[in-house]
Length: 64
Image (cartoon, rainbow, N blue to C red):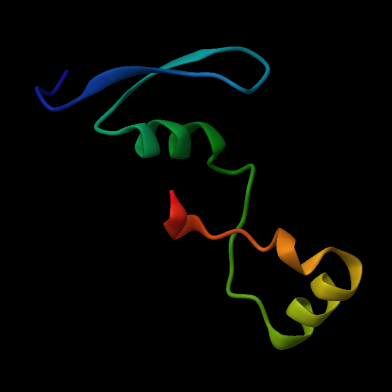
């Protein structure tokens, strides 16, 4: 194990997982890889989202 790595307990899925990683974000990213996809939203996708869902549901990742 690298000196700057730690073992993180990642919860929230079917079962808890122990993941060796250099950060919490890396540990979580490892666990969700393949489960989610992110791409830049097109104008049409934004409009469709705002019609279907509450526009206040747009999340700000930089607020964390």
